[in-house]
Length: 275
Image (tube, rainbow, N blue to C red; front, side):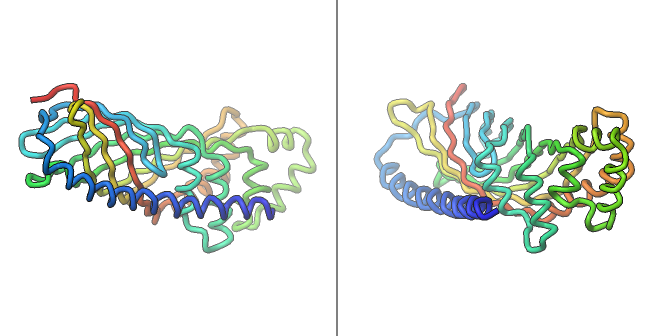
């Protein structure tokens, strides 16, 4: 228990340390780039670019961006959760009450297969054309697989309803029920809709103008969530309808309802089409 508390403390510290380091880098590099831009000639204007990005603490992603003559650009991307990034991000979930701490620990221990579909729109400033600001929408999906035993005994999902002792008593009396209780997986499929604002800067390379390096600061808010519960077992689906589905759906929605998350992105882009 003490070791787990130490690990959580280290992760919390990392969650505060890395954004501060990135912020200092962003500010410092912006000042240096302004000095360099006075002498650097303007390269070709990008129309279509492909990019790879690392968004801390959310995802690693690939995307396409289209630039218009009106200084507006549209972005479309697909990414996957980073395990380390996700561990840091989940520290932002509510944890004031013991029940909230258990729900957060359940999500941190069991989150799998996280993916992100993202669209965005940005405005590139005329006088400072390397700077841009925009809005982005992310549709995030992930699963939370667990056994009934884990839900009841490790994360106390039935304590609030006073049904834990009754379930344990039934399991002790029935060997077949105990086998199901210990081995059958219940899978929660969670979808989050998140809206964000972004401020970014692009750095160009004079010798290879098609390449760009971007730094971005973002803030995201949760706009909605949906949780679907399922099991490969027929008995599991019956049990889900009886108690697991309403509990998991309610608690997952509660955990993410006020989930505010700042992020820092480092992105490398390449212009496929220029003018």
